[in-house]
Length: 105
Picture (tube, rainbow, N blue to C red):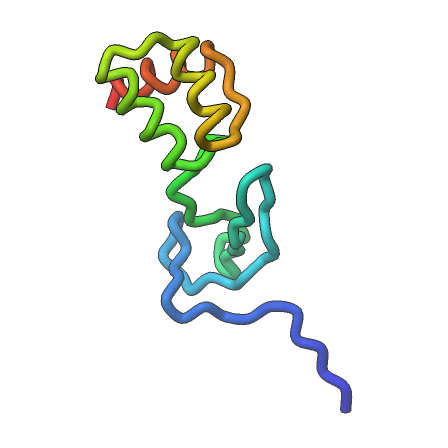
């Protein structure tokens, strides 16, 4: 008898929409990392638990850029510094958007 298990139940993960137990549902990849996706068997929604949600760049890179901005470094210099230190090519406009979004929170 050949049984193929394609999903496993995650005991510690609950659906963020309805609270039912979640099932692993593959991975989502971006340039810097891979994030586990989950599917709820009850409401059928797919979701991921990700601290870095909506952002392409890692959290540490954004935090470093915000720290430099608070020290008075220009946007272009921050983008240049990130390119040298973190090996991440970021435009000064992206840095400006991070600062703008940080002020909202």
